[in-house]
Image (cartoon, rainbow, N blue to C red; front, side):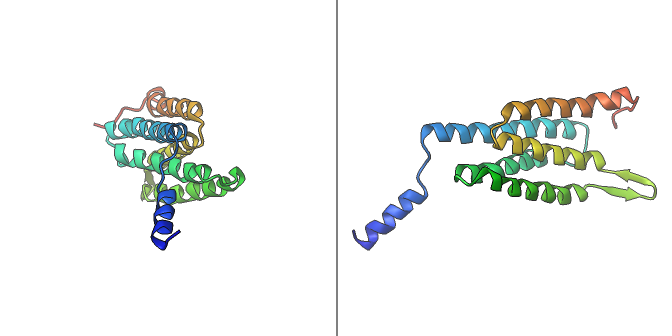
Length: 157
């Protein structure tokens, strides 16, 4: 085999598309993460919060990718837990940037918690736990919508 053929074969193996079944799994998991993150982001943006549709979608898709890539590369699932720990830690820093303290008043805690929740939903979708991700999204929306109503809080103008 010539050097050029070896290079061609290496490139073909490296960028080869997965089979139809694997591509379906990848597409479904990433789309579920995007849609669920988008639903939460839309709710937050609709209420005028700082982190909205794009932020939540990107956090969810990114979290799904971080767990999906090692799983698709046949890395031992036990090692994927380290990746998940890194996501949780990294999202903690992102959320911390949303928290602002004015004297005794603190803002952004719910935004930070929502970003953290969206990362968890993305991880669940990326791991193939779509039903869990959907159920958790519904529960998160209930918390964002029902709790303020039960507490007698009015949405901001």
